[in-house]
Length: 219
Image (tube, rainbow, N blue to C red; front, side, top):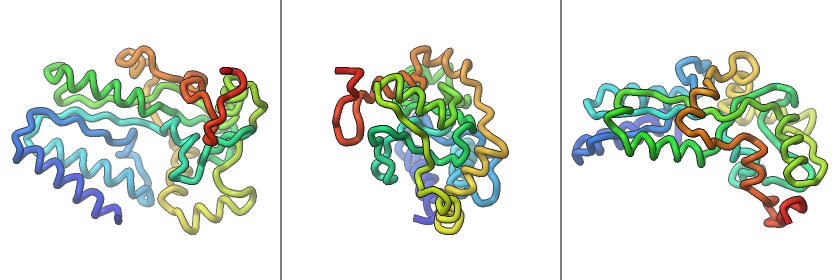
């Protein structure tokens, strides 16, 4: 589905909530979507839905997560967590990118939905750690007991051009990580979700490779 179609579909869901008499809507957007470069189409889609929600007359709150820790084991994106490596979108292993687990975004949503009076009209950035690919590999090594290295999700040398030519939305996002970066405040999110997972805690929570083989260190 093209980005304008995605935006229209989500805006239609907002309209449906209004028709159904829904009292309070919590929408999951993306951090810093107003800073997105022209090629970051999925960020622009999120921003458009935010605007539609705010203009709808509904009571609302917005969650703005950063990159997901779950991307380190995303088989739908052809990025399973294989023994000895952890793969990500950035090409520079030392580039730090803020991350959060979907588990903790869900916890934040539950807090919002449980207290509409406190959260109506507010936006919360969701970020629990600021890590590089090298940091993720070190965390996985520590938790799994297996030496691990970081590499990009695509093959060496040609990966940059694969992303740039065939996945421009993803390429623009990786450029955004390098040139702009998320501005989200990790400490502010942890005030709402004190037990939010960092990379080590997330890998410990995961406990196994994509093959279902447990980490030796957890056995």
